[in-house]
Length: 261
Image: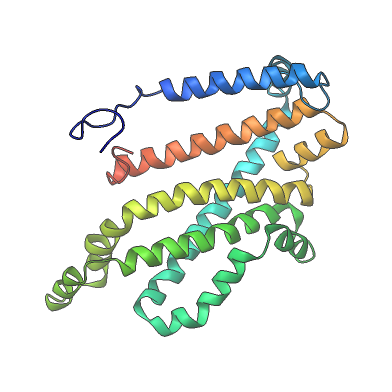
């Protein structure tokens, strides 16, 4: 028995964009009220102060250099992590013995705190590309796990039919495997992209490359410029959402996987 409406009625949803607008309005109201209660801009600046600071930062060359280099590192790390996770999952799905051998390594990457990897990698690699490596490391377990689950859930009847008719490896890949696991891969990519941004920026905060959003956050913290930290945080959220939307749009455009999502 449903609490609201008839059993045959579909749940009513807010029109597209209305939910996001309501969330933004509530968040801004709470933010403004909290800033008034704290009354200390260096701890919690008000939304108008952050907006003014954003208009000061955005036109600068340093801002766009930081955004550009951070995006490049995150995109490279995300792409490498997705490809590596999928490449590891395919042979492990075909050979359970490989899975039992290499699965513990994936679990170690998933379990060890990202800060440990960052501090260790600082001893081995150039700080300029550390965030790309860390992003890739954090995406690999997600891509590996979800791809493996998708492959394990394939309809074995279809696989056997492909084997009986002696379909080539390319036809099996593009006609059977990819269409079957595509929806899960798209969801995996969305989750992995968020992880890539969080881990990549964290790496930049600790590695302090010459140009990067993480470096901007660190310098803002040292200078007690909380408004700058809020600006950078909003930039990260906007970039992550924009890249996720672009990913879904490309998937819908070329394959139809993202339709209705």
